[in-house]
Length: 319
Image 1: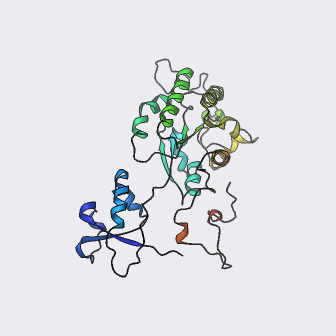
Image 2: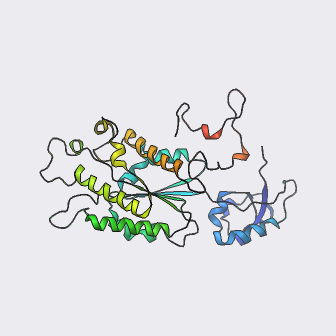
């Protein structure tokens, strides 16, 4: 097992908050373990290179093992961006599954906005995904379409976005995300079906706000844009309906996913990540585990355990 190495940094030049200073440390000296993630938050990325060089020249306290400090690394970031299908994704959902599987590898960031359509999304792209951010996401999973597909209201209000505008909005969302970094990967989630009977009950209106047919049309339009731009896309419309009992098991309210519905979403996302020829790979079994060299889990038999096979709960075969 490796030994954690400490190096001394002087707080006046770093503006370390007082609560981080050891009370028995002379001259307000603050200790950081190499790869300390607090350092990632307080030192701007542009300054880290010179900061790390300066850190290597600092005097090390007697009795503390010395070693050349490695410049702190930042975890890769996956951003989930969309409407309520994304916002509710951490409620026993597909986003929670991703956060669980990537718990030692990636920070999963949720940017879900219930009730939003592609028009709303396009207006805030620069705020959610600024082009000059110090760290750009390694992956963005995008879902819009279900609200766009609602039928237009006579007064012009509501969620509806005309089909051609929806397609153009999705193109522009992709163009913005693609401009963030040549290493930013993108997956579009297609519009899933709904269970009209569950959504409307026994009183389905003569002109319902949304129907399976309208969602099918927007699903096909989104997949068409994905093929046009060579975007990895997931056909949730078809994937959800693979089960004969999909209407009974997939939705909490006719629209949003149950655990069973979310299993389909996470399965399809993991399939894309597993099969993509991206370099580096973003599939959880192929990404490095953070601080793996510092600890090796041991099983009841005394033998080392493969950390990729320790995802809770035992016995579950994660894809």
